[in-house]
Image (cartoon, rainbow, N blue to C red; front, side, top):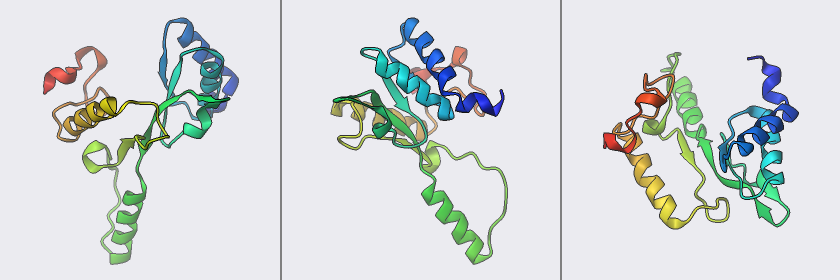
Length: 158
């Protein structure tokens, strides 16, 4: 996939509209700048929500007096940056490729009041599931885990 696709908001809107026509009412947008086109499609539709990606995108979801952002997934990189800088300063830095996930507290989601549209009950349930992911009891499907969507055990793995 060329880099241009990730900045093409018009194409993002077309993809968003297609997903909405297929019945999607919550869309996780991991599409770079093209994601803003998906936001536009959600804003033009009714009862469609977005899960933002990498940072708190609540402000991007403002749509008049409403908001299309349900929550946002987060990359929590500040602590990893501080850790690496500390290792460099101490002379202990060793380069490499590292997979930073839930178990290293490197990912999270927005649950700050006023920055999401989830009930306290939903947040409590997500927190409980997230702890299972952190503990390795649930392994989400990914290219790194070897778990595919068709063999994902989900909550049954608990």
